[in-house]
Image (cartoon, rainbow, N blue to C red; front, side):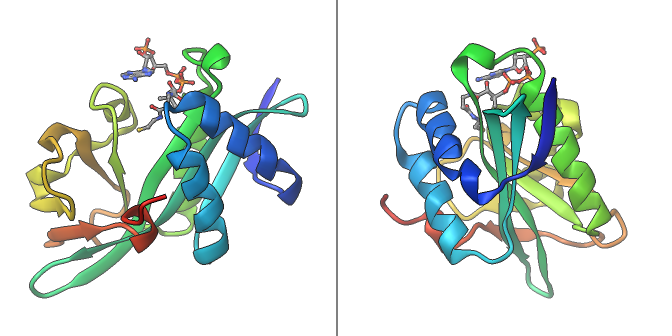
Length: 171
Ligand SMILES: CC(C)(COP(=O)(O)OP(=O)(O)OC[C@H]1O[C@@H](n2cnc3c(N)ncnc32)[C@H](O)[C@@H]1OP(=O)(O)O)[C@@H](O)C(=O)NCCC(=O)NCCS
């Protein structure tokens, strides 16, 4: 049975392996290792199947900077499920569980740059609809998505969404 839980130090090597296997490059695995060292506000959860790590999800702070306001939420990246375990609901469990934690922490929004067919099922919408834009050029509008978790806090929030600088570093 799969349990979604916070990562523990002994999971780190397995998390690296899940990311290495799920993505075509080693960049995401390296980014996770780096963020763990440099960012104090990350959320990192694993899907644990009877002691085996089969999936991982990470969130780090994102700032939306507008003319009059700066609002901090979280960015979902990266997320990975072992190739042999994909399309069996594990990713859905990881997303739903972690969004619940972030709601309880009063996180006002979550941003994701990802598959436009996957994230809308969790309530994500294209961020351009709210005049929230990516810091990066050339990102397709529909792949840059936001989920408002506190509509009140998000009133009049618009501007450029900036991920942590580790996301810009060559890895
Ligand atoms: C994306 C990912 C985390 C989803 O995890 P998962 O456990 O396979 O997801 P679930 O089983 O909960 O959901 C499966 C659904 O996701 C969809 N899905 C999976 N990968 C997809 C992709 N690359 N693009 C679009 N949809 C995708 C499937 O079509 C399926 O939809 P359905 O339920 O309508 O059939 C996993 O496929 C993965 O690790 N992919 C490689 C790494 C990656 O791309 N990470 C995300 C970066 S944004």
